[in-house]
Structures are given as structure tokens and as C-alpha cells.
Length: 384
Image 1 (cartoon, rainbow, N blue to C red):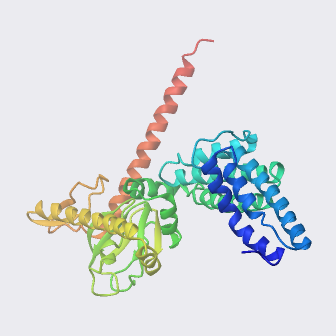
Image 2 (cartoon, helix red, strand yellow):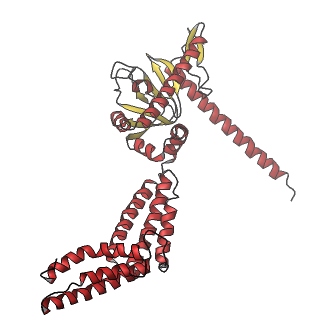
Image 3 (cartoon, rainbow, N blue to C red):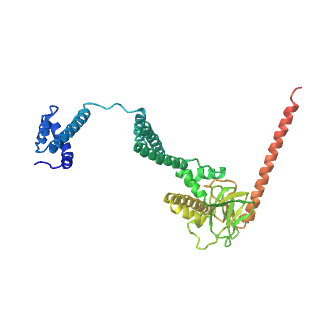
């Protein structure tokens, strides 16, 4: 069947040529007999000189195409076999990019492993972009890799910001180390808790911090320093010392009233950390771990208070209990005094605290006086 125009012939041959060349290369190898037969078959005789010139031009085009594809196949080798030749080794930028890409696959688990992964990917993509821009002169290679550099660099900045050191005041640092750090609370989580803080209140000696039936329960209070006595109806129950909570039972809703059922009075100058109770509960509500930590810390605080009271009651025979002011140990029972004695009142406890403070100051002054006298005697005995 003859073709009327060269354009239609070119369309057909452009479609069939890749298949013919691939089959011919696999069939005849390098002798080219199959391809020559195909080419001679395509050179059909025509009646007009115009058709003859058209077929001649097409045959020349086929010869050129056949030569170029043969060169390509002979240079790159059989795609299904072993390569007969290798391209030259790429530039050092390409090698460095792949080295950092290899290192990124060695990233360990954890937040620091993610930081390591992002840094190595940033450096690797940077070398790929340099290779595409300076060596290959390929804009698309440069563009894609520079986008990857920007994405990974933003991740590096975010992770470094998250890992920044969080510092607290000495008082809060002591609270974190004694209460929260042993429970694996991170500094960033504790920072969220501190952000709910209302104020650090200074409570003077003999100042009433909370009064029963009058002060509302709308906060959570932690003693940072000093001591406060908890009393009810004028009778002392126990002492709240450093890093203990003043209203831990109210946290669990023990009281059915919205007012304090006990009074808290400072028996020495104290500092109390006060949280917004509702704000703190909303903050830890979204973090089950923090919620469990607070339930554990406050529950342990309540249990310690109950143990102190139970030990005191079990040691009572004919009297009532007063907080032991001589020992700060949390496991020591409260003092037991007789019924007729009024030393269990808040006033008596404060007077004891005052007398203890006076005795301590007097002992201090006596020791300083003895030390100064000893120094003067030693100076008098020094030979001139």
C-alpha cells in the first residue's frame, strides 16, 4: 500500500520507528541485517518523480534517526543487561549531598534525633541545590532542593526553640526539683503550670492566711518557705511546712461548702505560691500526664496529713493533739497534751514559737559572745 503524502508517512513512521529499532537491535545484535531489510522494504517504487523525491527524503531521515538511536543504544548499553560503559563520577557537591542524605537515615529516636535528622537533610538539600545551580545548570533541580532546604531549616528553628533552656527563680526551681522532677515532668510542662500562678504571697508572722467559713476556696496554695498552723474552732490540728499544700483536701472536693472548713495562721514569716484553681484545672485537663501528676502529689499530701492526725490520735490517752514544733519531720506524730492544758490553742503554739525563737537568738548571742571572748584571750596571750 503506498502513501499519498509525506506528512502522513512521517506520522506513521514516527509511531512505529522506536518499536522497529528496539526489535531490530535485540534480533540482529550489531550486524544490522534486520534493520537494513526493513529500510529496503520501506523504499517502495513510485510512479512520479515527486513521490520518488519524497520517499528519498524520508529514507534519509530514517537513516539519520537509525544512526542516532544506534549511537544511544551502543553508548548506554542494553537496558536489560550489564552496562557496557559508565558515566563519569559526579561533582563533589553531589557526593556531599548524598553523604548527608545517608547520615540522615541514621537518626535515632527522640526529639534530639528529629533535630539531627532535620539538620542533615538541610545540609544535604543545600548541596543538591548547589549542584543543580552551579554544575548541572538545571533550574528545576535547584528550585526543588532549595524549597526542601527552607522547609527543613524552619523545622530546625522550631525544634531549637522548643529545646531552649527554661529557667525559674530559685524558689520555683526548688519546687520543681523536689516535687515535679522526680515524676518526670519536663521543664516546659512545669512552665505551663507556673503560667497559671496568681501570685506569690508573703504572709507575716501571726497573719491569718485563710479563715474558716469566711475565706473562699478558689485557689491552690503551696508553702514555699515558713510554716503555718491549721486549726479548727480555735484548736490546732497540724502544721503545714515547706513544699506542702494548704488546701489539698479542697482540690478533691472533700468539702461540700465553697468556704474553708479550717483556718491557716502563720507561725513564722512565710511565702505561699498561689495558683488560679480553675485556670490550672483547665490547663492540665488537656494533658492527662500532668493531671495524673497533680492528683498524685495532692493525694500524697492529703495522706500525709491524715497519717499525722491518726498517729497523734492513736497516741492520745487523755488529751488532745498539738502540732510538734520541735521537729519538722513529716513522719513524726503530733504532740499530745492533757485535756486541762490550754497549750493546744493557736495562741499557745504561737507563744511557743516566739519563746523558741527567743531562746535560739539568745543561744546565738551567747555563742557569739563566747567566740569573741576566746579571740580576745588568744590575742592577749600573743607574745610581743
